[in-house]
Image (tube, rainbow, N blue to C red; front, top):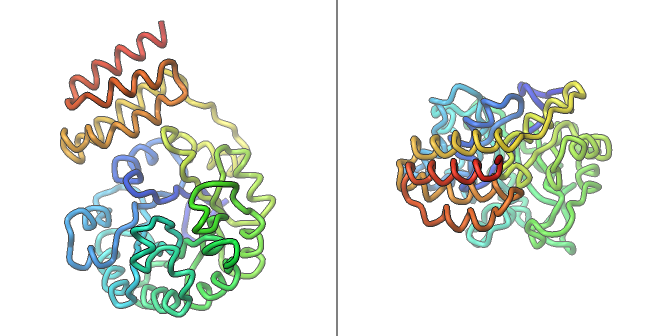
Amino acid sequence: MSFLNFDSCVFMAPMAGITDAPWRKILSSLGGGNLISEMAAVNAIQRQNPKSYQIANVKDESYPVVVQLVGNDAELFSEAVKLVADLGAKSIDINMGCPVKKIVNNNSGSALMKDMVLASQIIEAAVKASKLKVSVKFRKGWDNEHVNAVPFAKMCEESGAAYLTVHGRTRSQGYSGKADWDIIKQVKENVKIPVIGNGDIDSPQKAKEMMLQSGVDGVMIGRAMLGNPWLLNRVHCFLQNGVETASPTVAGIKKMLLKHLHLLVDYYGEKAGMAISRKHVGWYVKSLYEAKKFREQYNKINSLADAEEVIEKYFTEIES
C-alpha cells in the first residue's frame, strides 16, 4: 500500500524538537514509513538562520525526507521551497495546522485556516517554485464553531496541493479530547487527491481502523511514537501485509535508548545532546519499573559517560 512516489502509506508526524535527524536515522534503521522534518520557518530559512537551515538541510541523509515549512508570506515560501529543494527534500509539506500560540500569533500554522485567500496564495507559490510535490497539513478547523476542513481541503486541491494531511482536532482542542475521524472521512470524500488521516493512532490496529472508517490513503502517527520509534514500522508492516511485529523487549528498549543517546551527542555535541536526551529517555522508560525515580536521577546528569553508567545500572536492576 502506497501512493504517489512514496514507498509506504504510513507517515511520521512532524514534531518540533523531536523529529530531528537523529530521530529519523533511528526510524530509517527500523524499516518502513515516511520521514518528515521538524517544521522550519520560511523567514528563518531565507536568512539562513543556523538552526532553521540545519532543520531544512537533509541532503546528507541516505533516505527520503519530506521537509515541512511554516510561515505566512507567499514570496518567502517560494524562496524557501527553492532552497529546500537544493537541500535534498523529497517533497514539501506546508504547516497549516500547528496550534501553538507563538506560531498562531504570527498568522501561521492553524491561523491560516481563517484566511483561505492567503493560504491559497502560499500553496500556489510553493507549487510554482519547484518540481517537488507540495502537501498541506491542517486541522478540522479553528474551533467547533468554525469547522471548515472540507472547504479548506477543496481550496488546497484547487491551489495545486498533491496530497493532504488532516488532523481530526480543532485548533482550540490542541491535542486534547478525541480526534474526529468523521471529518477526515468527509475531506476524503470531497477531494480527488490522496488524503492522510492524523489523530489518535497508537497501534497498528488503530491505523487499520482509521483506514477502513475514513477511507484515507494513508495515516500519520505523532505522539504515540514518543519513546516508541518501533511503532512506525509496526504500522507499516501491518497495513502492508497484515504482519504483526512484536513490541520491543526491555533489552530492546535499552539498546535503542543508548543508540538514540549517542546519535544526539554526535549530532548536537555532548552538552546540547545530553540536554535534549532527557525528554527522550523519559519517554523510553515511561512504562518501566521506577521510571519516575530514574528520570529524576537522569535529569541531573550532564556527561555521556555518566549517562551510560546510570542507564546500565537501571536496566541491570530491571532485568535481574
